[in-house]
Length: 275
Picture: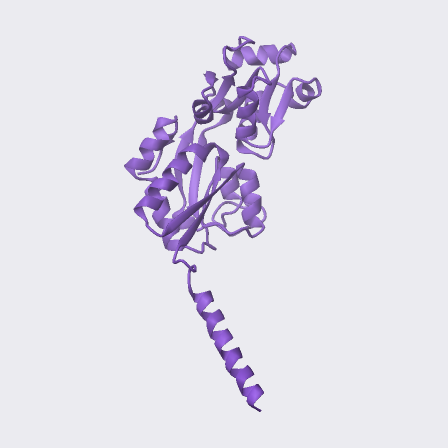
């Protein structure tokens, strides 16, 4: 009987301890904000996360940078995320129940629609390695050189925004992407950083990336695409309905609209749209 009483007391103490652990945000009192953001925001958000943490003691911002398509898939599969910033509306729409059925065919409902806004605009750029060995000076010149099979172009995969913008540019010039790839004129990257690296290392004659990535990598921009060529390059941002830190998520989104954040974005070539 005595052993049973001792066991019961131990079990009660254990349940109390477990209950206390579940209620606490973290053993050390820290709060963690998880931000999924397009790879092209790596440098700017890394700088801004440090500033946000300084202004919010006890908060740690964890950033997951990758292609917007990969991030969208991770969120749809249940990855923990408080804030999502994509490099195109397409991936945000695919998670937003407020988007049209055409934009969100699976009817996914992850985005807190009332928190959503367009944060930034970027430009699609034709970047060349140091010294521009192939002498490519414009998109017009690139199109002609691709037709004659003279150059090797790096572009993003079809499931990432920078690749989708590039596909539109190729279509604008009536270029057959599949034929060019088969002819060895195109190489691919799984996100914009991979394409940027290929250009930086002069593994290709040129690459189509964002002007902000060209700036961060110290690459020469030979030309920028017009909206007629590939559409407007918008970066929507939103909190997610499953956010573990909803108040912090909103505070972070508000911070991204601040003059301090706008200055950081502008310095690398983004055009801030909120604030």
